[in-house]
Image (cartoon, rainbow, N blue to C red; front, side, top):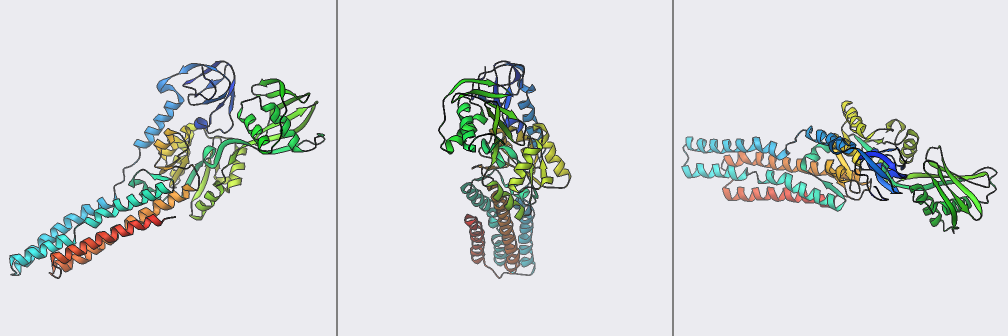
Length: 461
């Protein structure tokens, strides 16, 4: 038995009751799916209203959710391990310095200098070339960068993420819950020609009066719109709900019916007195920040791609609102196909970042060069990602990319300074121009410089 608000536990078939299920986390569809006796459901769907009884036909490893989890695991194990920049430099630098120190000692002795002078020169070489700055170059920048990221709502999981970010040229955006709010709302109320209704508010008021008796997400959107418009609802009697068709009831003495009709968005036709009086269009609305985020990505030279399980018309409308080119819209994609889309883009030579929030995005997040999960999304998506965007605000996507690039740039600057400084000072120490005390002070200053350079990340905006 699955009650309103509960999640379907496993794949199965409805044997009793009817309801509308929120399938967005599994399929990416923003419009709830109507189900009745005989309908198939997947584990992970959320029951929005009504009580249904489901007979399980797949359990454990055979469920769709388990198959998606295997896809995530396969994608993660296929990722190459990236070594830290500091390790690569140190693996060469340290042995070379030890060799130079030994050669310095031998050369001083061979030239007839006292052992004490030879030893002092050799020690000065070791001190001035001490890789303290090299050791601090990476961790200090990561510490400050990730700390600043946390303040801005960006959680970076590891230093290897930074190296992958620098080459990103394509960002794939899941639609529902990422670009859009994932919540249905009224976008337009239209009067029919010859409807005899004074204004659109009357159509909305009558429809909301009927829908007030329903728990369907579309009904809640219509009632919320009426409340926002401060409309006074009338009592409804003889309410009837026909799954997959619509609802009806008596309002102000009139038999009112509200039926779903075909349209670019979810559209409900409102009729009474034998006439269609108007239509109410309901859609998953775009987040206010999405357009600005897309503009920022374009300014960075990154191509945004919209990916969704919704139909092409809905996807085209959302893309148009946020400024994504029609050729960069991929609609009607099944959950198990999203990772394939990412792989196809990668096969074209693109470096891909994937942004999503649902279970259905997990495999794609793990497959992408960089996976970004909305903090408001599912645990599976967050686990599969490389970066977590805590606030669920799309503007944190360009922020995350810029911060990662800035942090990597700081690491490279630190490494360059530490390596160049030590390389330039080693000959002076080997020639006896630096005693160990001066060399120690100079080495300390090198480390201080690296730390101060890393602290500049605290001012990142």
